Amino acid sequence: VSPGQKTDPAVSDISVSEEPKSRTVKTKNPEIVSKTGTNSSVPIVQSSMPVEKTNPNIHEGTNDIVVNNPEVKQQPKETASPEKKKKFGEVLKGIFSKKENAEESKSDKTVVEDPRPADNRQATRRESDNNSSSDDPSSNGISTASLMEEVEVISNAPDNWMLGVKNLKITLKNRSNVTIQAASVAVNYYDENNRLLEKKLVYFSNVAPNARATVAAPDHKFADHVDFKLTSATAKEDRYAKTSP
Image (cartoon, rainbow, N blue to C red; front, top):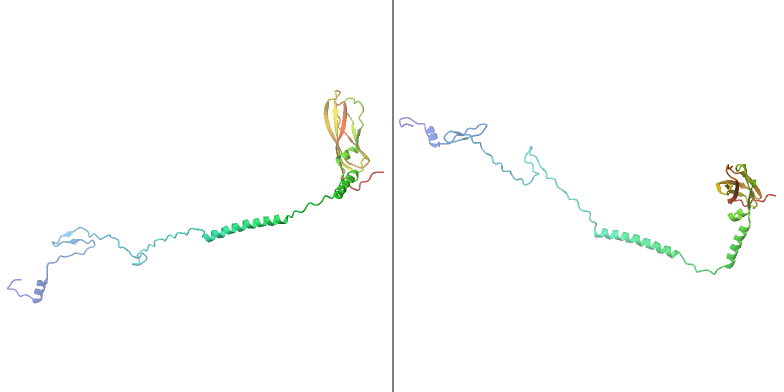
């Protein structure tokens, strides 16, 4: 301000109080304006240090993402307590003790009787009953051997055959007092040199007591003679079989 000019006191106050300040220009991309008025293109670097959060569950804003750390729960291992082990052992012990007690009770039940004196009368009576049943041919106790002794086998075979064995018939006579349910006779065919050529079986059934039955034997072209033999005989289970008059 020149000394000849009048100064406004308000303006003088402003001019006196003003100090050189750096101007800042606000733009979309902030730049630093130096005191000389030149713009620096160095961007402002913001600190990227993360801010520690004491509680991850606190919401700092509506747009903040809350990350919950999953809690891993360890399943407790199944360890049998000593009481359970003891109970299991007691159960096993109780089972074995029950088995032992059952065996002991069974052994106790088997009472050993004192040997009684031999009853000769009873033994002789049983033997006599067995003998009577075997002697009585009408009873079922007849044996196969005794029955076969009561059976006779005959045939119509001549002394010599011409041009093979033909029309051979075997007759079974039942001389016992029981019915023969089944019987078999073996027929052997021989040549002139008495060499066995073939063996056949003929069967009889339901031959009444003191009766006979006749069956035809197979023919043989090269046989010169035959022989036969009773091989089996079975009595019919009939206690009331009676002899024919």
